[in-house]
Image 1 (cartoon, rainbow, N blue to C red):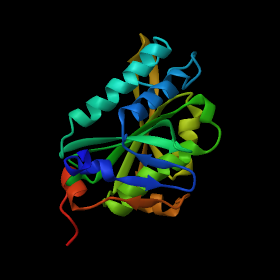
Image 2 (image 1 turned 45 degrees about the horizontal axis):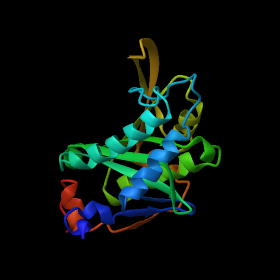
Image 3 (image 1 turned 90 degrees about the horizontal axis):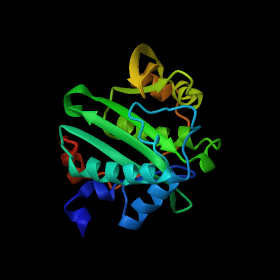
Image 4 (image 1 turned 45 degrees about the vertical axis):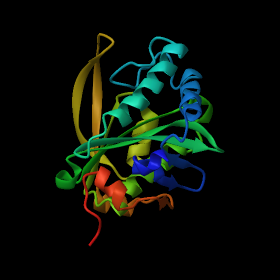
Length: 219
């Protein structure tokens, strides 16, 4: 089995309504691409630094499929990024990523996400980020987590505030030849613990998975 060689494929995060895991088949990646093609955001507002949704449904779907394969293909224990698919009722409805650069030393993670428009407004955004934060803080020993959202991306900002993130400065980027204002957010371990919102079950986190994250198993 492929999971014998890529143990991260065995990792599962479960909340009351969602399951987060890597794709078990090419068909699941195709279903994720279909979810992206069906729409993610208002065409008048670009929430991403790289505007991968700007060229229409077909290009968005292809971008998602290529991104997923690149995320696994360039895996590095010193700089990893989990491209978790978010499943609701057995179908992928979006993505929740979790990344760590020299995590074993820095103990800090970054996250990013999107969810199809048909599934927005149900609290899934909070639930899926709560799942990866549980993995980071409760299971991997993170000390801080970072996120960012462009001014006007109110849903993302609400998720960050609800989960206990605090403002951490600002940046100005150029996206589609426009100046964009990015708000940074940072979550400490204590603030995460004080704002837990969901029960999360973690399956498949073993010594082999920890090794792929550049971590030693618990003593």
